[in-house]
Image (cartoon, rainbow over all chains, first blue to last red; front, side, top):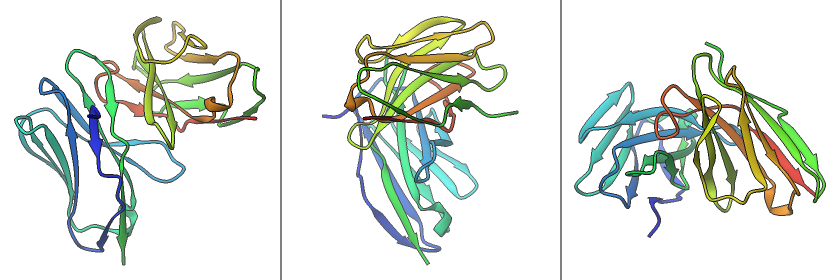
Length: 111
Length: 113
């Protein structure tokens, strides 16, 4: 089992829809969770961090964390073509003091 | 605040050579981490420097090394380059450390021929 797993996609959604991106992790003791967006040919950009169970909202983005089920998700409301990118989930696994990245989910938003 | 900067942006080297990459973190950030990104392996952690000391290390061979200067600028060195070292090398800075928010630079694209 990989430490951090994401579906590689592509996930295709129409403009204006909600895009739902999921990530599971192996270590129940993990404490910190991050979502990054990476456009093709660019470096990853931090868009959300979440530390506690539940939802955290920032504009059109909502991060959801369920530590009991060991998953974290990212919802993008009112998806725009400019949201088309690869979304990387990163987890600070317990007792490692480093981020482990998933391989990313490619999102395509079509007009 | 200015973001993380990396130089050079592109490099082409020959197998067996060595290479040095440079990174300047966001002002005030003392933690600098280096990552390798390839299509096959994704984003993998190389090492972290904090206040001039290597604090964390990933699972890479000793050919990969780094250092950090008193102004928090960091360099990464790869010796005896192999074809498999071709990758995007990303530097990230953080106010707290490699287990927290990472702010990435634009990366250095290294091609080994």
